[in-house]
Image 1 (cartoon, rainbow, N blue to C red):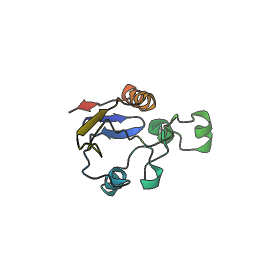
Image 2 (image 1 turned 60 degrees about the horizontal axis):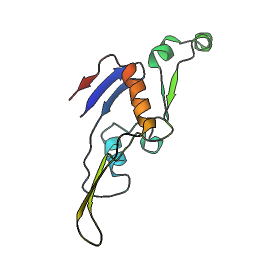
Image 3 (image 1 turned 30 degrees about the vertical axis):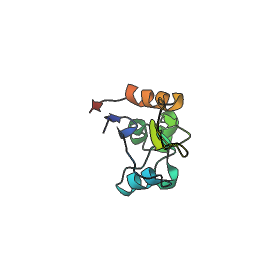
Amino acid sequence: MVRRLSNRFGKFTLVRVRIETGRTHQIRVHMASIGHPVVGDTLYGGSGQLTDQVVSQAAQSKAARRKAEPERLRLGRNFLHAARLEFPHPKTGKVLQLEAPLPADLESFLSRLEGDATGATHA
């Protein structure tokens, strides 16, 4: 675990995952199987958008919902990023290590969640 967030959009945990094989959907399937689908992963149970649960729960009637439309966050993709890859070069066998920072769209989405966080904890 890297960080836990609890805010008006729900509870989230940012995790660092190390995989041993390159199996398709490995992270997505395993996270969903333990009841924690990847944010944005609609194929494996994640939501395509996050809804402000405070406003949504407060607006029980249709009239109240029209007056207080809950804010929604949309990512448009799975919140997955390969920050580091390591593999042997196919011809030389030399181990290649590649690193990449979190893309701007994921960084912005995470910042938004952190800005609304009421109980962020780091590990």
